[in-house]
Image 1 (cartoon, rainbow, N blue to C red):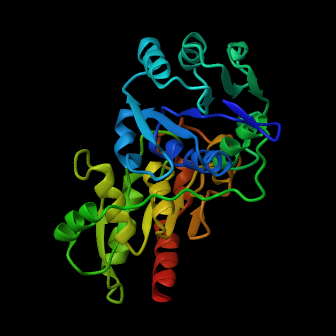
Image 2: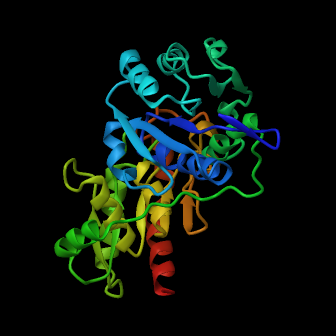
Length: 318
């Protein structure tokens, strides 16, 4: 760590976000902003093992560390081996906060609103539960505590490898297609599988709809890199609020999202960060029944025929 014109420069930086696909994708702009301000610095990223493959060759990341669980000893080992002078903890967990503290990282940036926030010496005070802006913007705004302000938030991007593209081409052929992804890991209220089935039926029954429909979501069907390649080749991606919709945004594919009306699950915070999207949200209040991941009846107010009509209209313009 050195000073240039009274501005602190961190030489070895560790960014930590150990939850799901979408969360990690929406943290990539933190890496990009840090690299823009500290171009000579080494910036590493600690993520969950199941996500690491997707960002393994991200250009602004020097090294991707991966763990399966947030065990104190594993995080401490990574922190100590990297000799970091700054840790940016995007996902606040006690085990992570304690690990970066005990490992001796001098500057530790995290939220100021947890009981264990005393373990951070750079504290950011902003409640995400209010969901007044996008998760990506909340993530980047952490860097204000380093004196870094942005005029425009960078959108996340994922580069798809030629190997992954070639592997996908062999499976799907040359005909145009859209991807429909009904599955979700339970982060928000979801559209029922029956609604997706009806949407697919409507599309297939339309003689003017000249696209194959590829349904994804089966475990082990594609690697994450292959899934990103598949989505990048698609004319459109359709899903609930789930990680792969953020992959669609990051590879430049038009995304159609079915989103919960609840404030903490709403598209204000969790929509794909792109202009190339259409979001459907039930017209109702937040007192809908069901828990995150369930197919609440409130979501049935979004009719498959509405989504079908939009898809047909949008693709007819291509």
